[in-house]
Image (cartoon, rainbow, N blue to C red):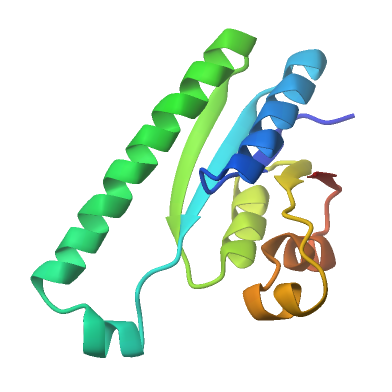
Length: 145
């Protein structure tokens, strides 16, 4: 039925539930997983007024260190479950677009993604990458709450 699962994660507690569920599904189906993390680059006003020169370099270094730590934790989880993984780190202004592009490029046929379950004004203000993935995906999306 499925040959490769894509699991997006941002390292949050909510996303960790998606990783756990996705790895369990991969283990049960005996299939590999692609893990993707997406960093939104600093741009616009942030670059002009807050981040300049060395501060921008510091931001990039901090992000790289955070991604390395996340990758290590996810690889340990996958090893315990005996699930082969590929870890992909992307920079994109739209995490949802990067998730969908990665799913296509890596030939994933299902996405397992966690949702914060925001509603109403909180969803409008904070956005919902999960909702955008669902709306634009051409492959099945399994949402973990």
